[in-house]
Image (cartoon, rainbow, N blue to C red; front, side):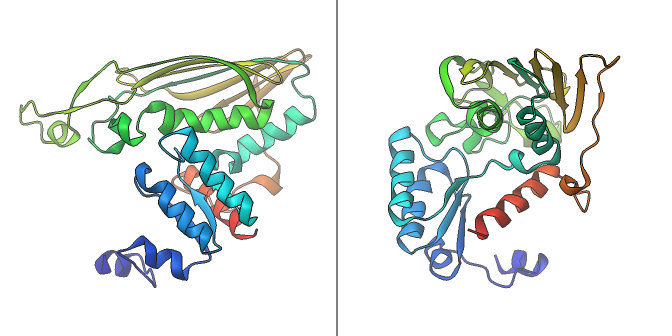
Length: 276
């Protein structure tokens, strides 16, 4: 711990979450999911705003209890959905609110990953600990859909585990012919159809696809189409000849181009919560 703190020039490092809660103004919870509730409630009891990784809890009952504790104390309890703070998503939100799409019909969200899910053998492969494609990846896109088009009114979904036994990442890297595998109990594929307050959406995620095209959002309306493909925003309205990249307003642009755009969005989310 001390070595890591020195390497990244972190002034204070802790080995117990109780110590973090006692001395910080904002508590960011990135612990294993089964521990989220106890840490969250302790932080709220100490009068601290909370930013919590998803899934918030292992079940809806515990998640509602965490929210109730925050509301009772008039504190912030936010989920770590950083996509809302990325320039392409923020500008798309503005365009949708300005009726760029016209009447919204449907959004298609697709993602394919070349490597199988859970190859590291950590909590993400364990359904009992809140792992899986839905919780780890799909939740981000579901949040974006709710942000753009309102709450879901109806849902039809299917989660699958196509590869229950996956060769561990260490064995893949070594390439020594061993057959060590890790058991996958969480979902590694997801299909979900949703009806929102405005329009509908279809999410289709698959891993172990032997092909990695990234992810794409297509939003279709009566007057136009918006597309976000791996972070780039494109659009076409009636009268336009082609689907073309849309210039992001300077006020939304990233001052510094980060190696990981999601990390930039996370920093912006931290700043927003800390300002509360």
